[in-house]
Length: 431
Image (cartoon, rainbow, N blue to C red):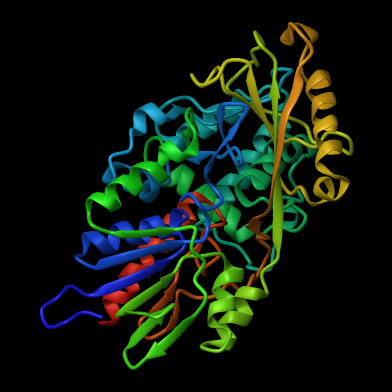
């Protein structure tokens, strides 16, 4: 609690990207912040890991130019944005050369030019996509909230759905098109195509995720006097008059920026209806298979892949092409429930075989090997139509932050950062 004239106190429970955003913005606003995280390092589900001496990540992530709040937060804490992110216009290119690549410049005119020049589609395919995109734009990129992506795109030709819609959907929402929310995907497309020049650009990490935000944010917060408690799971949260008590310490306000399951545990008796909504979310895993092959190079830094019954991955990333570790490749399996059930060893073997079949033999100067298979089993909530996501506000002085909190975005880094900032703004507005 704050004494007379002292700055208000705030606890942020959870040190992922939502919690870091909340802690930074609250500290900027003059709050005395204590940040708790149960893990030994900050970053949540977007953090670095070390494998055989290599600085990798718990999963390969993609940012886009429309992630304005994430980029702004990185600038605030002094992250080397240009050095840690490799920027290029959106490209969904397959190993055989098929695919779409936006030219530099404004996204919407570039999208039209890219569709007209797309390899692997006939003119009927291209015109059908442009007609559909024009219809989406005319309605403000809105649709019936009950529609799935598959239903929204049912009239599009099969090549367009296979080479563009399905990979975009699983990359953005981590949910198969047959089950994914069309409204949320349209919101992502709107922001990418209409948020200004470079909104659709790919921003691919060329260094470990720790260097993007968690490490510079931790240094910034420590310099600002924030009390950071890592490796500490909060056991109890309870009200005390206008204050909140976190494991015996009183605060004027609390931001629950931990996972939905942890937030539900801490609010079960305080706000059972909110806790029930948080607990009701279901999740999709993401598996990242790291392959190693010295001297190998892929056709581009990010290559799209055709998913199939024995081909798990939808994208492959060449870390050498990104200016990181040469000969290191990340193959990403989104919507990976079936493969998690099959086991990580089986997934690794299937991805290795997929890599050998998808790329020409000349790609691999020596046989690639599986370096590590990493699974984030609760990577994102399943972004289905009409999903009932819990709101930011839980009670007076108690708010939630996280990519799962009610909002227009799927479970992305941008959604997490925006939710952290929105939680702090909600507390400020309530006073």
